[in-house]
Length: 315
Image (cartoon, rainbow, N blue to C red; front, side, top):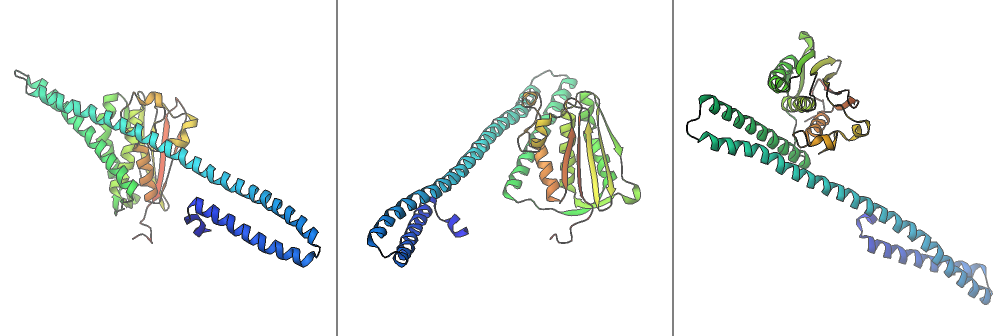
């Protein structure tokens, strides 16, 4: 069967037709000679035999070709969807790159203007810095997607203090939350005597950063909370927000690449729609799982868990 799959379709179906036809002629003629001695009856049966062969092979090849065409249509459908997503992705990339670049170039030119006050210079430099940070995040996401696509991602396990990690993330995202006028806090911590795990620190930080960035981005009032706990052989993490929530029909696709919760809302927010897919990929690379609980208009809670120790059979 595997050999047949490697043969081109037109060659395979021709070979099948010839083999079936040859075997049918050989064995049916032999059977007639052994069971019937009347030449007239043999002649009549030869006619029936021919029609029987035509009908049976017609039915067989109908379903065989039908199945092959269904696979081709499904492949074509997936290819078109992939092309559509890639086109939308490239279009979005051009917009995302152009926005921070315009900020960097525009305000760099303004800094050359004479008679600027110290306050104006500070404001322009701050805008250039934020635009540069946004550009760096974009590039990091593109590099991550590229590595995931080519399978070049490797896990580097090290000891991680989860309380220190939570504090670092909190301080890193506090400014972003304050700018939106929402609260950001840690509501659950591991116990101090049980707060270390072995994982890839860069990946774990990226997972939580993507979840925090996503929650802050889609939350305009209320707040975002983050927490972690160690339960047996797994470390459990969550990021909860009071944002726009996710429609029920979108939940199964929210971790798909280039997807945001609502395409209409999407245009009002920055991002390529790949952060959650990167987070999911990183979680699964570390032998964990990720899920989301959400209702439209009622916020979302993203949760994931990973083993606390390096897998025994991992090289």
